[in-house]
Length: 90
Image (cartoon, rainbow, N blue to C red; front, side, top):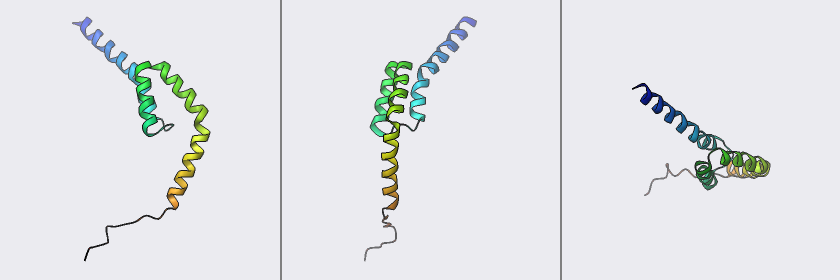
């Protein structure tokens, strides 16, 4: 009985250790959209090696991507919004 409990606990810990890089990729704000899905898939297939690659690649590309994302967000904030909830037909 104790051996089964120890093995079960060991599998749970190993599973969490395996999934931790994917959770860290999802929680980071370094990538969005399709890039996020591709990085999560890469990390799930390669685990910690893929996570190290994720850190290296996103650290190198971070300043250019951050500047482009900030410019897009600034333009989006200046755009007028259309509220159609007050318009009634007729």
